[in-house]
Image (tube, rainbow, N blue to C red; front, side):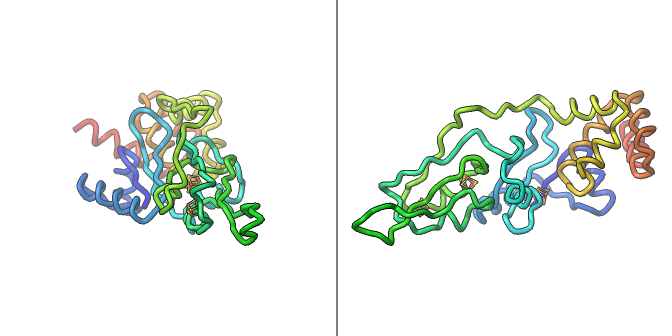
Length: 227
Ligand code: SF4
Ligand code: SF4
Ligand code: SF4
């Protein structure tokens, strides 16, 4: 379930890529996503969040990238890591099955009295700290603990990144080199920032992008803000 907010949401709705939902339905969808064990995370900013992702392990690009490239970009991790209690773990492997990024695995419990007994083991380097495994452990053997090193949330990282790219004449590189067009999240963040820029910077963005879509979007946005 991909949720987008603010101006980028308006643009996606207008062009038929998304549908508008009321607050109540949005909250119900968030609840449903949690009940279905989807990984929930938002844009890594303190204000004006442009997206909330509710990701499954099978088809979500972020989860596939996490498995393919191993170490995740901090935008996707929470400030917590699961801690396993080996005494309580009975080796049922439920946490392994629900983890969307394969951060949990089963290893031998090294118990000579029970040679077939296995226990869960965590790979911290790829864990998102999402907590999906925690609520699925019926033995209460997993608890979330604060990470040793906190993930810092910038006030608005997308804003800073887009401005830097604009000033260096590299807006196109920012979008194409990072394959932002293939990602709803990245494009929502970038478009959200461009729509908030002052007219001079927007003109700069138009020149650098030479995109009819961006021209139209900025035209629609400026018409709607003048009324
Ligand atoms: S990562 Fe992409 S596909 Fe997954 S919920 Fe977010 S926007 Fe949707
Ligand atoms: S779900 Fe709990 S009991 Fe089962 S393997 Fe994972 S940690 Fe152990
Ligand atoms: S918190 Fe649990 S389910 Fe989430 S990524 Fe880490 S090990 Fe996997």
